[in-house]
Length: 57
Image (cartoon, rainbow, N blue to C red; front, side, top):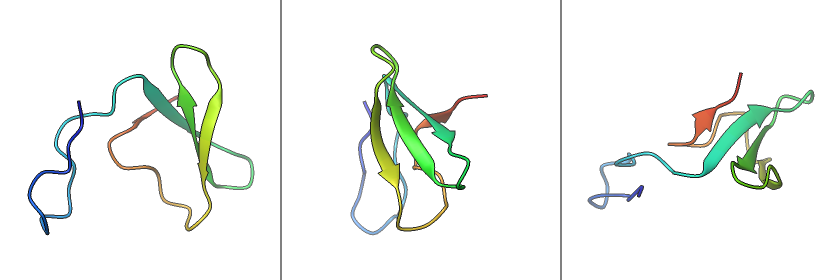
């Protein structure tokens, strides 16, 4: 399970399980559930990937 660790160290400890991410044609990243394949969240604040979530090819 991914945890945020100590306050202020600005990193995640461990990987987020059961999730993956892919890039949309517009350049934003979208998070997907590995079990069902449903899209969960789109990162619209900036075009950087989600932290700790594995990337699909």
